[in-house]
Image 1 (cartoon, rainbow, N blue to C red):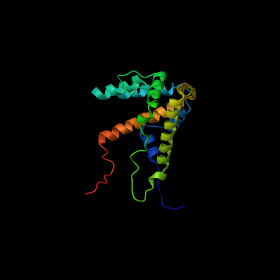
Image 2: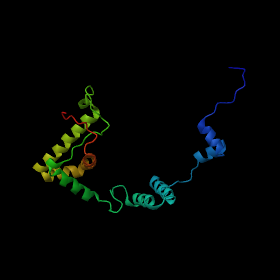
Image 3: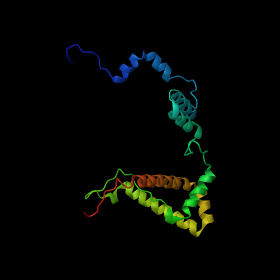
Image 4: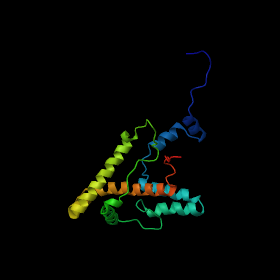
Amino acid sequence: VSNVPMLPKRSAVADSFRRRGGSTRSLVKKLTSTTPRGSPRSRALAAAASQAVGRTGTDQQAASGVVESGLRSTSRNRPAKTAKEEFEEFLKVLSSPESLPLCLPSARLTGGSCNHLSSAGAVRHYERMNEEILTWAKRYQRDPVATRQELNLSQAWRYYADHLRRAAQQGAVLKSKGSASAPSFAHH
């Protein structure tokens, strides 16, 4: 406790609130409002539409493509695939285990003499993921009907399909970069 006169403690949030003309009464009224606000999806679509109003040209087309296409579509010009189509595509990829893309950790992991990357959690996760996918592929070759039924009933195929899709995308990026991020150990 000091006898020196001081201003009360301030916070950036409180200052911003007062600058916008807010009062405690209006804040309490806003927080305790019982009027329905709509579903989260409808609010997100409305927000995306209002943000698209200020955009021009390709930005606006891209924003409208995202809003109209839904979550499953990979391109705004292509309609979203049905679950059955995605499942059939997954089985087609699974039917040729030699051409399965490898699931790899992100490029943020770098090598070094003392890094022991093989014991990193991400590396172990992707090694197990590759083993599991290869196991499913072998089971599908041995007994396609039972494996298909089990994957479809458990919906486990969605998990593996997502990992395979990411692995294929990551492989395409690495090919386009020409593995520039990987160190070269060529003898000079």
